[in-house]
Every structure is written in C-alpha cells, then in structure tokens.
Image (cartoon, rainbow, N blue to C red; front, side):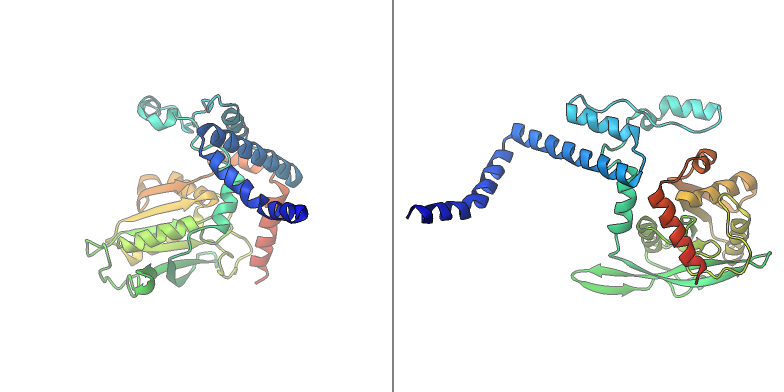
Length: 320
C-alpha cells in the first residue's frame, strides 16, 4: 500500500510542480524574480555561445542587460548623428528628441547577431510576390538584373485569393491604391551579397498594394544574374546604379522615382547620391541600416561564422 501511494505521488509530482509554479508566477515579486533569473541565465548562455563562435559582444547591449538584471534601469547611451558640422545638424541635435533617447531595445531584442538570425529564419513569408526579370546590358559588357513586381498573392478569410497588381511594368494600368495615371517608381537596392530579405519583401508588398511600380536591382552575379564581366559590383561603386536609374527613368519618364536600400547595398546608393547630387533622377531616397563608417567596416575583422558563411554563399553564386 505504501509503495502504491509513493508511486502515485511520484506520478503526480510534475503536475503539482507546474501547478505551484503557475500559482507562484501570479505574485508580482515571484514573477519579477523568475524573469530576472531567466534573463540572467539566457545572457550567460549567450556569452558562452559568442565565446565559442568568436562573435563580438556589443558593449552597450551587455551594459543594458546588466543594468536590467541589477534593477538600476537602462544606462544613457544616445545614438550618434554622423554628419558634417552644419546649421541643419545643430538644429537636429537640439530639436530631434529621438537622438537623445537611449538604445531602442535591451538584450535579446537589441542584440545584432540575434536580429540577423531571426530575420533570416523567422521572416514574414505569408505573402508571395511575383516578379518578371529584365537583364540590363551595361556599357562594359556586364549584366545586372531588374526584377519588376507584377503581382502578389494575399491570404484572406482562410483562403488564398490572387490579386494581380498589373500585368506589365509599362502597361499603365491602374492598381489597388493607385490614384494617378503615372504611378511612382520604387527602386529597391538589397544587400550586396544578393537576395531579398523578409523586410524588403514586406516593403515590396506594401508598395505594390499602394500602386507603385516596384523594381529590385540585383548586382552582377547575384540572385541568379549571369556574370559576364571580369569583376563584381564593388561596395560603394555607383557606376552600375547610374545606368539602372537612367534605364528605369527612360521606361517611366513621367513617374516620380524613389529609392530604398538596405545594409551594404546602401553604400552604392549613398555613393550615387553623393556623385550625382541634384542632377539625379531620384526625388527621394532612404537607406535602411546603412554602413556609414565604410573604412572602419572594412578594417574590422569579420567573425569566422560570418566570413565562412559569406564565402560559401559567394562561391555558390560564382559556381552557377
């Protein structure tokens, strides 16, 4: 009889433990202690993983985590405004409140390595865009690819309905959210290693629904674009982008053209804007997560995980 009771209690022990844990988490003090303990354990584990993989730890993220765990609150670490001294810069520093705010998010949301991993693994793939490709022959014999967004699939009311934004980029047909006969053109410049991240896919989807002509610029030898020249598109070289902008403008001369770049692709856009100036056909431009300190970016050694990943990806591109 005694052995039966002990066996019965042993079987119920996990359920009782979960019940006590759920009841304990209802108390604010216990919930706070548990959250701090889990955060501390996760941070120690992440430090160990970074040491094994030789990943650099962000000092600001580490300090913010220690402040949170100690209960002292986040430290003051305002963003930096990278620009030349000017009256506009002085005005922004005095009146732009976001420049005086501390970092946007503590660990783990603010960790750059975890942000990169989450964007690659858990991006939004619910909407599937459809593209048609133009291969543009450049003046030196190289080829770049231009992908025009021609439609999207939307999941609504438990089913999937196909909505065709427009049949061809130059057909002139109206689309959902288009309030003019000459829709604006959105030129997207992704990362220099090629491919469209989930963030740019969401931007493409929103722009198509608003009636934009959306075109994605792929550099030489990336995203299935054939490599017909003896060189790739170097970081910050705007020569190919100049010809792309001229070609897109020739197809839609009456449309306003804007550009958005992401990551290392911003080096090409910023160089183009710096060299073309007011003579550019672009009416507006935005750089998402740009490389502003290019010299420091090149001089800083890349972690082995990123270096080998980029090398394998580039070899796969060149072997096709």
